[in-house]
Each structure stands twice: as C-alpha cells, then as structure tokens.
Length: 408
Ligand SMILES: [Zn+2]
Ligand SMILES: [Zn+2]
Image (cartoon, rainbow, N blue to C red; front, top):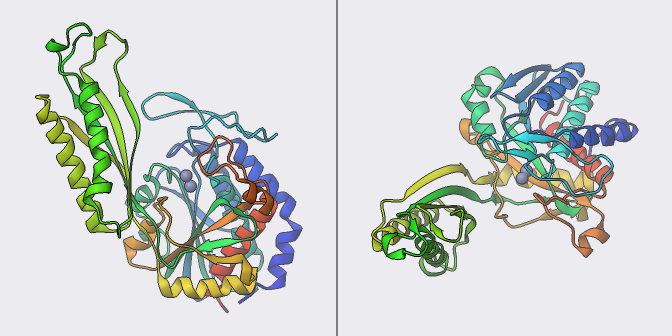
C-alpha cells in the first residue's frame, strides 16, 4: 500500500521544521544512559501531540496513542550519542561534553544518526496523531536510550515496558547508514550479527626494565594472546560460517624501562550462529588461559563487557513490508541486502514477548557522495549530506510500516 496523500502532503509542509528538529538534537547529544535532556524534550513533544508518555528504563520514553479498536504496533527509535569529537564542519555541529561511567571527560557527538532516528520517530508520531481518520488501533513509540552500549533495551524491559505499555503484535525500527537518501535496505531473516565484547586483564610480574629475568612480562604475554587469537577464525571456524574477531584496544605500562604488572585488551566478536559463537568464546577462554599458563603467569581475568543479540527479521512480516515499501517509495528504492556484521539491541523488544519485528536501513547521502565514498557511522565526519531526503524517506517508511498494520 502507498500512504494517503494527506499524510505525505502534511509531511512535506513540515519538512523545514523536521530538518530544524534534527539539527536541534544533533547539537545536543548525550552519552548512553545519560540522555536526560533528550528524553525530557522527546516527552514534551509527544505529549504535545496528544500521546500518553512515561519515562522507562531511566532515560527511555514510551509514548502511546490509542485510536479506537484495532491492533497494537510498536516503533522503536534509539536516542544516544557517542564519545566522539565531531569533525564534520557543520554549522550545527556538536560541542557537547560528557562523562563516561569511569569518570573520563569526553566530547559527545551524534555520530551514528540517532538524531535522525529521534526526529523521524517524533514526526511519525505527530502525523499519526494528526490523521487519526486514516488508521485504527494503538501506536506505541519506544524512544530507547543506550543502544551503543547494549544497555537500553534491556533497561526498558527490566523496567517492565511490556507491563506498562500495550503489547504490540509487531515491532518496527530503522537505522540511518551511508547509503543513498531515498532508498531503504532490508534483510529477510538474519539482519544483523550477534556481538560479544570481552575485556582481558593479563597478569604478569613487575620488574625493572633491565631485569626481565625478575619479571613475567605481560606485554609479551599479551602479544602472544593477541597473535594466537587471530587463529580462532582462520583455523577453528569453517569457511561457511562468518565470524569477526577484532582486538582494537591494548593498554600496558607507563615507561620504557618499567615492565608493568598487567596488560589490558578488549576483544569484539561478531557472529550469526549460536553454536559458532559458543565455539569462538570457548576458544578465546582456552587460548588466554593456556598462554598465561605457558608463561607461568597468574590467572588472567576475562570479563564480558556487553553483548548484543542477533537481529532476526521475521520473513513473512518483512516480505510483506517490502511490498508496501515498494508501493510507497518505488521499486528501485527498496533493496534487499544480506545480513550486516553490525549489531543492535532492537531485537530484545520483540524477542522478550515472542512477537515478530523488522528492522531496516535508510540512506542519508546523495548518490554522487556515495559513489565518491562517505564517512561511515561512528566516524567524527559522519553526517548525512542529503538529510532532507533521508528524513522524508525515514518518515514515509515508518508510516508505511505502522499504517499498513493499523488499517481501518
Ligand atoms: Zn546506531
Ligand atoms: Zn552506532
């Protein structure tokens, strides 16, 4: 189905306001689970549109609009920023500062497009409220904190979101990515990888740099671990299974002539299959412990920092949604894509109550910029350069998903 022109005309009449709203959120990002001002602003706006809203999971906002009898459908938008110093040169660039949970002061940026998610969610909510004659049922908007740390959906569920808000029969959501504005990319079935983040503390024995015989050097030991961990994917996993194992941080020591007593590094694992994930996690544990034993070192510590579940787009729900997208956005604007190695916690909302969901991507850039290459999500230079089209497409896609399930 295509949307009623009453909806798209209203959207087009408010596009300037929508771009302004996006820039307002872009200017004032907040770190994961600290989105107090963002949540307050969202709550104020949805209440202004006639929604019943409450804070959930700390800094999440749940907004519900009951419009007669009919199905309940939920739409989720994540709202957190990242510890990144923005380098886009935009006149609405962020200069915000934040404090990480460990006390470190950091610059904050909407470097993953969550500012577009918030504004698209708010505009979709406004349009549904303004055009109640075009649908029936209940719309539930989940403005979720802490997506980047995988804490937010879990916090809202822990706070009883599905006891406090009407339970939906389907959940929808979308993410901005560096594709062409006006297009959406959808995966049927597995859409995004599971992720596991681990922190390894390598224990050694401290000594003067000139006397290695008195030390158990955690730098050399950690280097062996990092090297051997590269063999997990290449030597222990079948070529038919996709896995990523990245070690992106390694910290040890303060001075060239002091052998430190420990080294700390982190491991990020992406996988698509539970059994493969279990194999990889067991191999990491085995290698880290065995390397320590080989060096005669004290037991290392392996701590799980966070994990993301798999995002699995229900095939039936997703296929029919893609048909609706084609009717609304055009045949060429809807692209089916294989699963990506990125991760998301959106799936928790549907998984928790056993309801299907679909999560898709929408582009933010002109075709020429995409052709030439653009900065990706989490880059200090990530900025959609055709945000007007991106926001318009995002709202049309969200409305299509919601209205097609809330038919009168
Ligand atoms: Zn994101
Ligand atoms: Zn992100």
